[in-house]
Length: 198
Image (cartoon, rainbow, N blue to C red; front, side, top):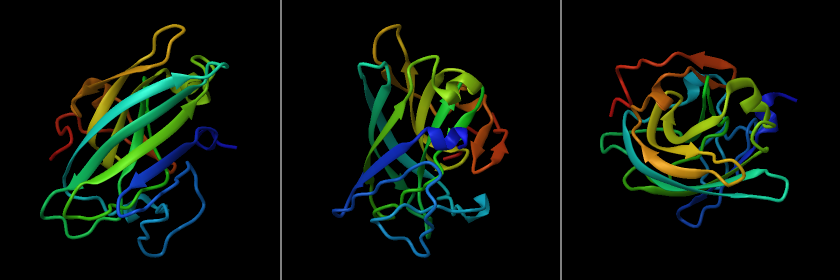
């Protein structure tokens, strides 16, 4: 089982009565966008990225009795007015040494207005999560319009013995721009002069 498969994400998208569940490494591939199903694209060239987007992201977290961290990320994303087609957006998790983008994309409810979402993700206790063991502590989360195109981000602070806390940060923050990005076995080194290029 891959490291990515061990870290799962469930993403519920609220819009037009649609409820979406997405998991890292989900095997299904939607032939056409269906608001009720995640879109999983195989080669990265098939992620039809919106040319620009705006959005917002906030977070909350709890700890269970075993120290596992459960994150709830709430927000919205809207492609810019000249967007003719795009097949979805995703979530990216930024660690000290790399960023990992969710394998499953979520379809936009509409290209002419905001798509609201609630994403939940669970991680092992600090120091025991496989991805953190490999890449360092989880430092930030962003909603992204493409693998290296963050739209809105939050920083995580993880105090000893307590749940993570969240604060909004710029998409140009070094936590976001200074690490390579992994998505479906591909890695990008980001252009640090670009930010989110909106």
